[in-house]
Image (cartoon, rainbow, N blue to C red; front, side, top):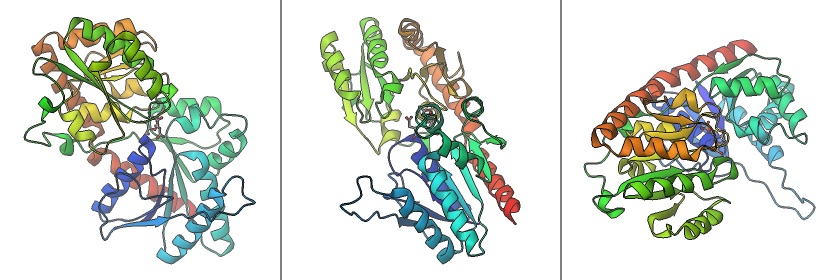
Length: 376
Ligand code: GMT
């Protein structure tokens, strides 16, 4: 199949999923065209089945807001015609589903029918999309998609609750190449980060308010009082400075390392012992799945789709949002005995296998077939 993938090219989960999906589809022989404003961060290798088309938005003094949707829909029309693309797959409803729908309509005016698959990722529904300023356009473009998928049952429920949705939503969970995370390095080089007796606790996110970053620090503070440990914070975002200030206030600044954005998540997870994700909202929690695939147990909140990923008492523990005392207790329970830690590491890796690329990518292929059949 010839598939166009529209996504955010940044470190965010939806862009990562879209990129990994495109790479996996290309490996399975499909021709994949990424159409976005910058080369996606995880799209390192170009191959004969992978193409990247940059959306340029010309500047003009009249434009207070550059019209990205306009440029994207025009680019989609051009690329569909040039490469005879058979299906559009847009990740994150805003503004991609809207631009995709416009492209569909423009192509139809020229006698070309192309189906659009929209994948909902989370904040496009639970945080940004239901704002009254966006809601009518988001509802419209979801309802006008030929197939809609969501990354968890929980997100499907949220979408139906928050929007007036007239079409069925297929749940296609996020996925991971478990093989890639299995002993990727002969030596994880953990001594670069910590002393021999110190446990390494990790958090990876875009450091936005929804991630409850102060809870990450509070949980770690309680852990390090009981067990020698350091905390590695990966990512950039508005909560970074307040988090640094909190670490100084608690006197733990020497035990917390802020690494910024990283393309070496697999290396960081390789030497991590525990992963913290106490988010306010999380439609899936791809970062938790990446940790689990690396054999890192997860201490998380039980919000949204996290309970579909992190199995309580198996791959880690779940607690109510904000219950930092319980999250710290659970973390300590895992770390305090080497046998317990080994057991949870193995269980986390095993639980991740349910989401292996080989199981999930064929579900997207079925979705594309359904979408193509729908318009032909
Ligand atoms: O986590 C974020 O804020 C980034 C956001 C995104 O769209 O890039 O992540 C969302 O999509 C991910 C991939 O499907 C999910 O794993 C995250 O749980 C989801 N984030 C939220 O729902 C807050």
